[in-house]
Image (tube, rainbow, N blue to C red; front, side, top):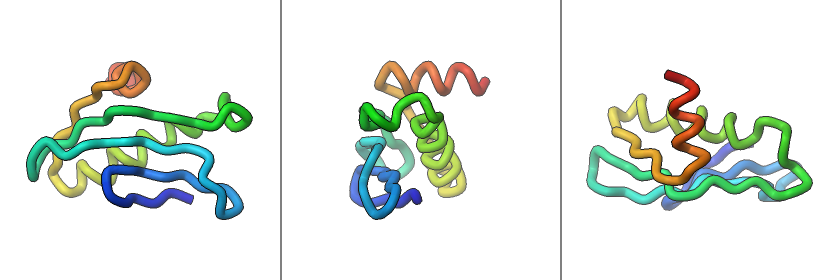
Length: 81
């Protein structure tokens, strides 16, 4: 299950946080994705990609531009184009 809070998108399984995306607001219409993290035992299941897709969909619907700063988010963004 995904949720968005202050500067963080969280993915939980069984009410336990197992992954997150940290972002910072540059202004009212721009965010920067600063870090993507998935707990070691949950890696390799596509969770990070799903979290970035969720983040992208959420902010795109709000007409917010996304700057991909961390290496994983840059790679993900380049693969979808």
